[in-house]
Length: 271
DNA sequence: CTTTGCACCTGTTGGC
DNA sequence: TGCCAACAGGTGCAAA
Image (tube, rainbow, N blue to C red):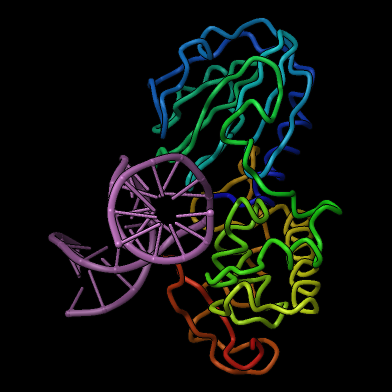
């Protein structure tokens, strides 16, 4: 998916154009994505968008009728602006008709989610209730990370992608932050020292912050709401660079599979 | 309880 | 050029 920086970039793009706009109606072009879409979402109309929030990789749209629309982009989801007169594109599944302009949820693989809940209470939404801390808040630091990894035998890379440990770190930024922290992705999570968890927490914050500032990464599917591309992909130090040289020490970057996901690292810089 | 592996679905890419 | 296997940013759930 879009990882946290991509979702945050989308949130900001939407906020700029449609915060306080009036939603005139919603078109559901199919009944389900990964899960069924509540038919009531298709009845939402004539209500103002009060707030656009992000929790982990979920987007939350609060409307002034007390309903909150939840969107998750999955692996291939996009939210794009479109002129209301433009015919929907292939895989445009949900059309949000705002005054003058549509926001369209396009998702080829349909791993995404569109849902709706009354009120905005996080603990009442199952998908949000068990989530760990946001990585860019003070609640997430080396002390917390050390505690939450205690006794874990899984690879540190798997652990930081576990949403109950910390949210928002996906497959790209997991490899990138471990490279920056100088930690091998296969290391047992529970064996990290406090110095290492301090370093890793800091590197996760740094890499996510830089990626947000760059407008996210652009790989195959991800685009911002205005259709433009993010630039962080140019700054990958290890992701997708297997066989190329480490920018720090010149060693060939390696690729392994950890937790069924491609994982990239420098065998010299990371220990 | 933790950990692992699969499933969901379509589009693109790279090797032959 | 064409074909087909492998792979892709996530996460919920079953099985071990």
